[in-house]
Each structure stands twice: as structure tokens, then as C-alpha cells.
Length: 226
Image: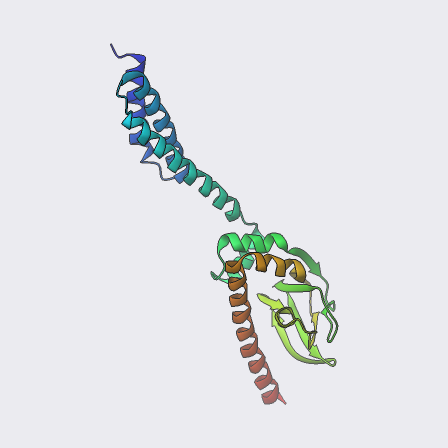
């Protein structure tokens, strides 16, 4: 007849065997932890080996898998993106690590503006950096339109990077959904994390290149029309 201790030993190996078949990594790690705990219990009460080698290995497995589970749960917390955040991530592209992206989103404020709302005024200080999620805006210098900008672009990043006053005004053309950040808070966040800072600078660089290309195309189109 199988004793309770032997039964526990068999159960631990069964859990090991079935646990490795889980596709869900959380279930896999959890099953390995449970099996290791049962292995320790079985080893303590069935083996008189003073070195208890199986115990050492079981403890090692528990520690490794507890660390992995904690890391995965931490990572999954950042992967829980809202619909709007997923849209921003798709527009920005894969240049931001998901954890840094979530930090960027958590630092921002979502606002919907009506048409003809001035976001940035030429030669006037602004404390915010904007990202256009939906809608269109126009860029003007001395009340003359020089460009229009569509969704998926930052607004005011040049003055954010240089620390100078904005050289142009930016106003909404239609209803616009915008994500904004307090400049000082965002700079503090960037200073605390070099990886985050380099990723943000890379995004700004790509954004500026796209804007220059679009602005040149718009200028050529105006010349042809006129």
C-alpha cells in the first residue's frame, strides 16, 4: 500500500510532467513551484541523506520560478494598455520599450479640443508638449498658414528640446484628441532613465524628419497650385 509520503512524491512528479505542457507561462511557473514544494516535503520525510541534495535543487527551482512569475506579472501590468494607448503605440511604432511607453502614457493627460483652439502661441512660453492622436491642426507664423499636421505627430517638440520660445502657432482645425505632458515633469522622467531619454529623442528625431518631408510636399503643392 502506498503511504501518504509516497503519494505526495508521486503527485509532485505528476505535476512536474503536466506542468511543462502548459502554454500559459504563469501556469507553467506556478505548477513548477507547487511541484517543488511537494518535492521538499517528500524528501524531508522519506530520505535521511544529511546533504539533502534534492531539497537544495527544489529550493533553487522555487526561487527561479518565483522570480520569473514576479517578473511576468510586473511586465503584464504594463502590457495592459487601453484602446487609446494601443493606438498611440501603433502610430509611434516599435521604438519605445513597452515599459517605458507605459510610463510615458501614465505621465500624460488626455484632452479633447474643439476646432480653432490654440494649443501653442508663437513667441509665447508653453508648459506643455502635445501629441496629436485624432484630428488635424494648422501651423501659422504671423497668422499665415505654413503647414497642416495630421494625427500621429508631436506638437511643440522643438521648443521642448531647445528650451526656446515656439517659432510658430498651432491651432486645431477640427475636433482633436490630444495627449499632453507637463514639460518639467517629462524632463525629470527622462533624466532619471537614460534608456527612456534616448528612446524619446529617437522618436522626436523621426517625428521631425516626417514633418520636414510633409512640409516640403505642402510647399511644392502650393507653388504648383498658385
